[in-house]
Image (tube, rainbow, N blue to C red; front, side):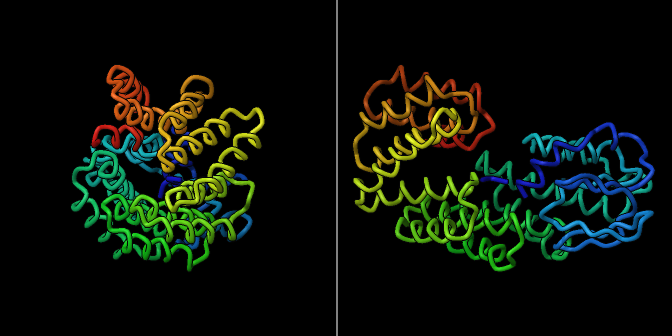
Length: 343
């Protein structure tokens, strides 16, 4: 929710052409515009830019990305690759960067961040190289614990630990983000705590985690909807199927004509039915997403992953293979594709 992930994702909005040529100044892209000048200070809380109007501060939660004056093309391309989820290509793009003349400390720091976080994201996706990636990212954090990359790096490390099943250690990392209270990382971490407990099948702790997130995040956001979904599903696993089904059906009704919300709601309904050991009902719910509300990649990939398992358990091999193949062909870079492969 996933998204480290925010900085990598929104970095895709940076214009590559600006970075591929020598800029006349550093440029800090923010959620409200752009600041041109020289980045003179950097910390985990944000950056300070010396402009022709004086010094301007950009809080970390508002920073979309930074383009450095005279930065090399390989750094810009690596940034774009990471933003698009092409984590495997980032290291290749940065392989010769260290030999580039005029590389500043700030550029080297971003390159190290892109390498280490991309390795972690790739390890989460492939299931390979996790220990080495985790060590490298831990070393990056130790050496750059007051850089603008601190929060996304902590988030990525926590995600890796959760993926490895080291739930308690992952939660400790997420709580560092919660305790610092810097948006949006604190809200993302609150939801991630619930997700980590749920993946570990520790549903009582998951319900408490999701409830705490719902009490702290904007109720109109995707994060709040994710927390609501997580709490609903974990309640079903705790034997509160009636309450969970009522909540899931209400989510379907309240989605109106929003196809993305309808897909998410039907996926939730399907997961609740699975938790309640009602696979036939789960199948019908998930088919709504697959056949009717399949425009959103994330929710459609989730539905295909779940459908593959439901069809397989029902002995319908052809249908299971079809769902699995469509998932791999259309959404190969998603965690859902990996889970089907691992299963």
